[in-house]
Length: 495
Image 1 (tube, one colour):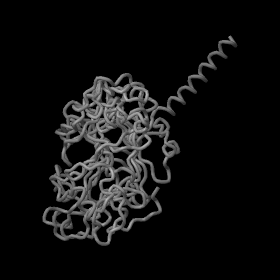
Image 2 (cartoon, one colour):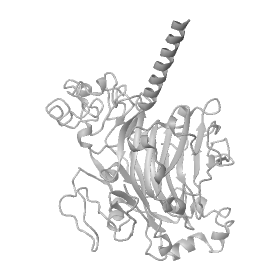
Image 3 (cartoon, helix red, strand yellow):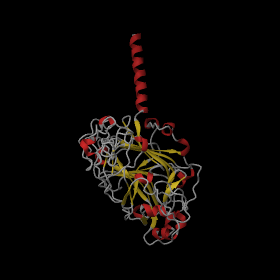
Image 4 (cartoon, helix red, strand yellow):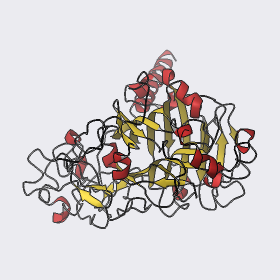
């Protein structure tokens, strides 16, 4: 009996240790967006606002030259025009969309500042897929006007009803029906933390929004600046240790998450008025805004009120489940010019053990975006293996394909602001697709092309002379102004 108890004890100890180790290694870092690559990894939307806002979304060149986008003290700055009175086409602002699209993952966004609780403002950090709403929308951080608490929402096509079991106390589920055409236009959850949005968020220096997207659920946590878990800070996030999320959307019988959410891009934007902030049921019924007259008139005639309507993003880190990056089996035979990437796998994650598919890299298709996993051997691309006849003339990663995680990339043909992606989803649902990918140095990515204002530019295209608007700060190697002549930003909370 004693030996049985001992055996049981050892088994329990082993299982416990295994569970802890498994939890610890559940996620591995896939990519980081920060001041080193943000405006290469995101493209500018400069078309008419789909939400009918009083806004003029500008392209990359205008955002840069007018001080609406840039880098400030190592963080990514995205603001609005707060000087022009009565702009005829709406107040100028920025909306950016990631080139990478994702299916599943853990998205950890460290945000130091967001647009404040200002009448007429409608800021959002969110995700959405092609053919909206059938590929889903995840609104992670969003609100309007003088709102003080975040509203976290999902939007889908018909046939998705969720529960919010496991959500922290104080959060209220507005509707279980996530159908964007339903009575509630999605399933939103109203949080009760007055420091997770707008002015309250900015008063504490922001914090971290972590979004976990699996086949079972989509969950969002918010951590105040002074309460960010150590595992996040150390780069080993373990959601199971974080406690109840601010909002949890459970799939199951009522909603197959994988059917309704796929290939989502990351978006930051700030619009004005429009279908939500300017709605008579919202603007007109809030005493703080209804007394200001018409929403558009207010936004047009009070530019200085929007000086605080800016984003300051330290980083966005995307993690995937399943241990180390790479690890597929046999990328070969893909045709990633069309984004199909074989089976989305890439010979042990090393693209043919460092030789980009033993010199064939997808049967000689590397350079058409077929270089195994586009990583050409976890950092071996550019180490003598890619570009020496082994990987399509060194173009491994100009359209990266497969890595065992469904990664597919192809050269971009979309214009800024379009919602579609050239590359199709890989064959393993935990990856991402991308139109183009900036080179990541030692991470194993080869140099890709960037898309900016309707023209292709290779990395460093702006290293040669580019005129500097009078009064601006210096430019970095990619042509983005460092600092902003229009903003006075506190440094104390910046990473």
